[in-house]
Image (cartoon, rainbow, N blue to C red):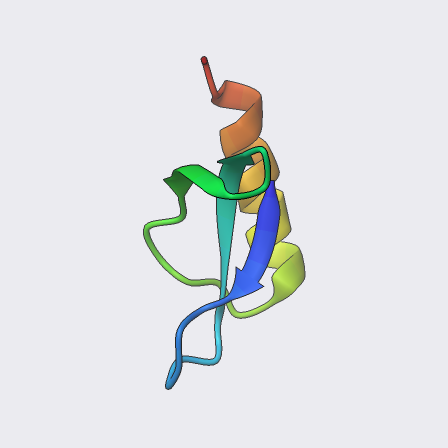
Length: 51
């Protein structure tokens, strides 16, 4: 699970579940104000992820 900055001009953060570091399997629909908030939401999504 990765946390990254949202595309400019936004200043928020997004999370992504990736395979091999490059293939995005699932990403956040919205943006989060802090990297911590994005990480928590991403970890929750990862815990529910079924491959």
